[in-house]
Image 1 (cartoon, rainbow, N blue to C red):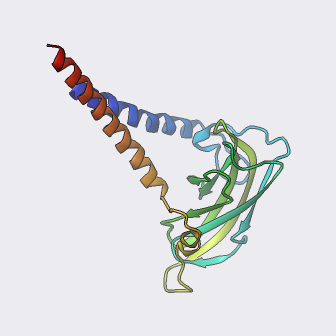
Image 2: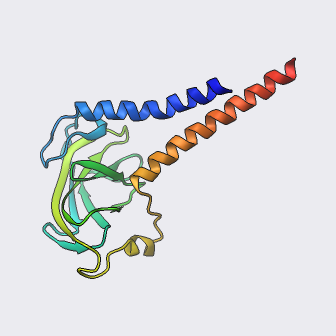
Image 3: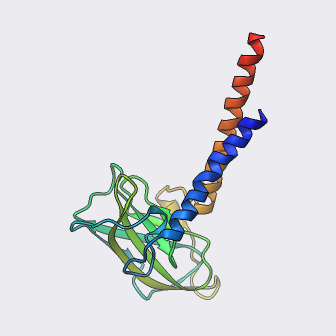
Length: 189
């Protein structure tokens, strides 16, 4: 049983170690961010992405930003999606054909927001757009929150929580598999 738990942990953490390795090897691209954890960016073949909200140079308040994009020559859905980066760090990816993402837990100050197209094989394309926004501390301006996304019925999951859920899920799966195997082998004796 202990061996199975160790295997489950190795599997769960192995993906994160491989991701860290790919990040170290990433190549810078126009707009300031690197190819990220998805490797080198591929030619977009005419596909484009543009951040339509918030506006470049906008001053926002709160700790969240709702990023909305539009694409051309690229249909979102069926595996095609987009990633959002904040200050060069990936902070989320769209689900299905969504053109909106909420980035949470941001500190006050200036932030570079970048949107990058990604194909169904999860490879990023060299189609990207970036803007600079300034976040005010809460209380300096109007209250900022997840209210727009919540009004649309979207669940807001910070990137760090989704990684934690993946690790916990892998551990639970490993324990269940090992426990099941132990029960089967125990009955044979």
